[in-house]
Image (cartoon, rainbow, N blue to C red; front, top):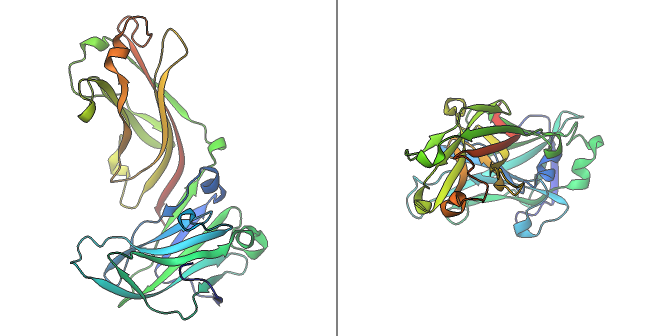
Amino acid sequence: MENQVVSRSISHVPPAHFLLKIQTFSSLLENNVESYESSEFNVGSHKWKLVVYPNGNKKKKVKDHISLYLAMADSSSFGSGWEVFVIFRLFVHDQNEDTYLIPQDAMGNERRFHGLKLEWGFDQFIPLNEFNDASNGYLVGDTCIFGAEVFVKERNIVKGECLSMKKFTSASPYKYVWKIKNFSNLEAKRYESEVFVAGDQKWKIQLYPKGYGVASGSHISMYLALADLSAITRGFKIYVHFTLRIRNQVQSIHNHYKTSVWFRTSIDNWGWHEFIELSYLNKAGNGFLVNDVCIVEAEVSVLGISEAL
């Protein structure tokens, strides 16, 4: 096990550099979120992030524990052969006592971050049975708070973020229907639906009637996209479960795809290049084009939002 936990200490002082508050923690497990990466924070002229595995790091065969790591977020500007020596502490808040539990390794040694080792931390940060026991104060009202202190050369202003999740069963999907007339006469490369609102965010469907990229000329390409990028600031992330569908107007065998995606500044749309073959769509009697009308649908459930505290 990496950085095996062997001792613990208690602090009455919050972590100096970063706090990660997670609401409805159980939804991470229910929605099969294997890991969550926080937004970046700066310490010692470097960018860092916390990485949480709510049900243990499966890549390291961890069971019955939360895994928690400090990771270097951006080393793209470093030259070859770089290394950074760091002493760090990871925290979990005891909300009952308003103290912070700090698991520690054997010696509290410096850790060397470099191009082949961008992450250090605890495979077995805290046992799940201890964490889930509300009397211990770590998970209260399905909310928990992790933290980090990183000692390189200097200290920066404390930053943080709040991740709020919903259970999939309690999130009502918003359904949007887009009826496209005179489909065979569409000439533009891309068409966009009207803007619709789901989970307090604005969305639109992007449709390429003759395909996009590798699917040009052979398939329809279709994507769900954020319609208002000005609302997506750095570090803001949206976890979305969505379905895109072309209705079969004759039978109930619709052509659809579904997935779950974290939307953010670097990922503002997501979908499928090869959504449906043009030859299959246009074939008479298949039911996808009736009187030259194509009916496209989107079902969108916003299951999580992460933003700065």
